Structures are given as structure tokens and as C-alpha cells.
Image 1 (cartoon, rainbow over the protein chains, first blue to last red):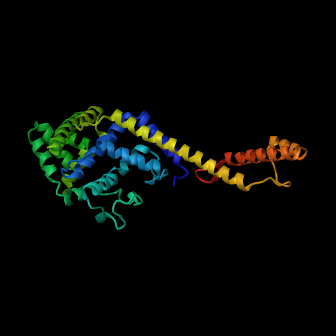
Image 2 (image 1 turned 180 degrees about the vertical axis):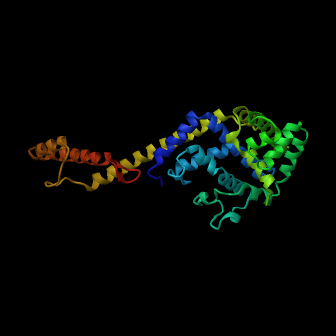
Image 3 (image 1 turned 135 degrees about the vertical axis):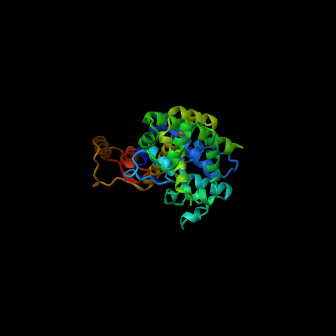
Length: 198
Length: 128
């Protein structure tokens, strides 16, 4: 059954995908990384874009609830649902990422299942459970070949330092740190996709 | 449980909101994701769903109309708010039996349509 805010929700989603291509691209990247992180190297017929597509379909058909007061932004709402939609897909497709571990009311892929209960899945717990820390080693190996600045900023990222702190410690400007972070993210992205595709 | 360092690294890796457009574009290209095409597909889903709702609304409207047509009749004391309906109703009172029957039928149809027009058939509530 559609709720009374159905038209408002539809307009918010439509506006996002009609006028905010930049945000949509970020959504696709986030969903794709999430899907690949959870997949443990399985060959999938879906990409992150398909996951976003599935979320939108469920939101507009009312299969997924959406609290407009808490999440008035369609981008944030869809992003928030990526993890649970990915888990749900993988559970159905490969019987993996056992959602029973995260809640008591999962009903074997039943569409009436309250997906929002598991929206707060913790990546790091799933990854450790699924022994995906192999990926971290690949990141570390990739970064071992970089120049000194890159390696030091990478270390700062791992220790949870903010840009200003890293800049101060290394005697660099904040914009230098931001640029180095871009280089690092590019390298990690490349290494990630290479690892997941091979 | 992952160590704090590993968690920080994964958070950085997944932090797409702070990545720039060039990084984002490069990732999507390498992952074979065509954002423009995907957006079009999503907009199509939205349009198809809206069209499906309109069709369902029409079907529901027709069903309600037919149901009401079969059970409704206008009683003398019943309030007729629409001015045109009221004139037709009065005219009806002074016509021949056959004419009256025809007018009565049309009147009923008009009245039902008037009523249903203000009813949101999707939610079963009155439209304001």
C-alpha cells in the first residue's frame, strides 16, 4: 500500500536522477564498492547501478519504507539503504552474508521483510567475518610502491588523522594532503577493481 | 573484528562524498558503469510506475462508478449540490415517463461521477 507521501517521494527521487548526475555517480560508485566488498570474489550479474535501481524500485512501490522526516534527502536515503539491499541480493543469489546474524526477523528473502532493520550493518564486522582483510593487504602492497609523501599520508589515513593533523606532521599544506589523498584513492580504486575482477 | 587502522582505511576507501569528480568518473569507467544510461533506466522505472498507478486509478474509478450506478438512485429529499444537476432534476419531474427514466439515468451517472471526482480512489479518501 502506498503511503500519503508517495508523490512527494517520487518527486524527490525523480529530481535526483534527472538533475543531480554528480550525486548519482557517487551513489553508483558507493553501491558498486559495497557490492564488490561483500561479494567475496563471486561473479555477479549486477553492478552497483543495478543495486541503486532495485532500491529506487522498492522505494517507489512502497516495498521499502522511507521516513521523510528523518531522511528528507533522496540521495542520503538511497545511500543509507545500499548496504541492506546488497546483503539482501547476495543472500538471495549466493546464500551469503547471512542476514540472520544481524536480526531475528529475516524471512528468507521475503519481500515483506523489514529491510530497514538491517540498514545499519557494520561493514567492518562483515568484512572480518568474511575474512576480507586480504583486501587490506592488497592495499598495503599497492601503497608500498608509492613515494614517501604518499606513504606517509596513507599512514595518517590509517591512524585516523584529519587533513590538518597530517599536514602539520608532514610539513605540507592541507591542499597538498588533499591532492595526495586523491592519488591514494585512485590507486586503491584501481587495485580494488583489479583484485575483484581477477 | 577489524583493527582500527583497517576500519579507518575502509572508511576512507568508501567515502565517495569526499572523492572528486575525476576519481569518481575513473572508477565508474573501470567498473563498466554508464551513469547516464543507468539514470535513464531509473527514470523509466519511475514513469512506468506512475503510469501503472494512473491505470489502476482509472480501473478503480470505473469499478466504483459501475457499483454505484447499479445501487444508487436519487430520492426526492436527497441533496443535490451541483446547480446543473438540480435544474435537470427539476426538469425531470415534469417530463414524460420515458424521458424521466432517461434523465434519471443520466442524472445518476453525473452524480456518481461528481462524487467520485473528489474521491482519491487510490487511498479511498476524499481529495481536498
